[in-house]
Amino acid sequence: MRPPTPFLASALLLVLACNDPGSPATTEGSGSTSSASSSSSSGVETRGDSTTAAVDTTAGTGAATSTTGTSTSGLDGSSGSTSTGSAESTSTGDGPVNGCADGEREAFEDELLYPGIAGCSGGWSVPGVVVNNPFCGRAGGDDGINPTGRGCSVEDLCSAGWHVCASRTEVMAAGVASCNEVAFGGAFYATRQSGQGMDTCANNGVNDVFGCGDLGHALIVGCAPLNRSTANGCVALPDPWSCNTSLTQEAEFLLKEGPEFGGVLCCAD
Image (cartoon, rainbow, N blue to C red; front, top):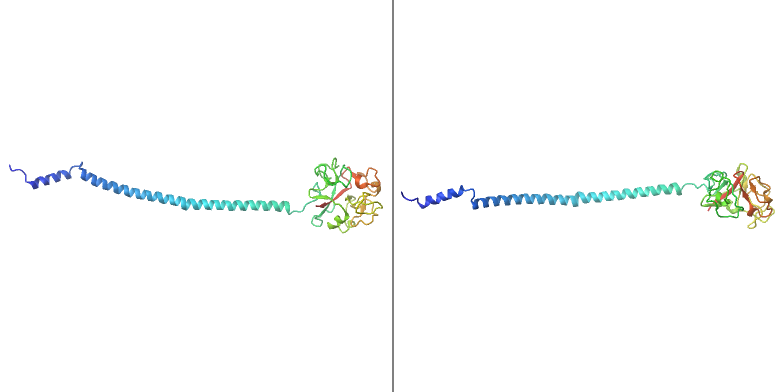
């Protein structure tokens, strides 16, 4: 039998090679190409999605949300803080101040008509209207926790930011034209105004104590708008008013160990 021709041998080898699944050339070519294509496709899209997501999260939604959130929070916080401060300022700073330590006026009660002066009832045991310091933490006043004023001075009847009116001129400056035009309900309200005797107001001296009321000595001189005084030894005033028997130094000895029949006039600082 004649051996196969070269052409037939070559064709037979080609057929065997095509049908061999382990052919390095075919497998590597196809597999490598497919794998590369798959890897390339998957890698590009994955990296694309990942990159896009990172960009969106960081520069888009995240940054914008964070900025907006912070900005909104800051504005809300500022607005809330400002509003609270404004409310507090309005409620405590702009409202009328009473003037009496116990929060209750007994004379010159209209705070709009008399914003700078108040009649405050109560007692005190530290003698004298010349004292200008509180002794019991401003706990005085007939409506307070210490109505008899034990351990208190005249100053303890006035609230913080107020003081016992120093003179007739200060009472006039507070808007009082005449104490005769005001109702006091059977009481006397002392000031620090005194004199040198003869029922006359003066810029110095400690003889007599003058004030406003419908109780006390009425025949006084040069004291307008004040209309009443203690008179010598407080004889014109009932208990619990007392001058410790002094006839010439009432301003240094005047005390009142009970809440009845008045107190002092307080003027705003």
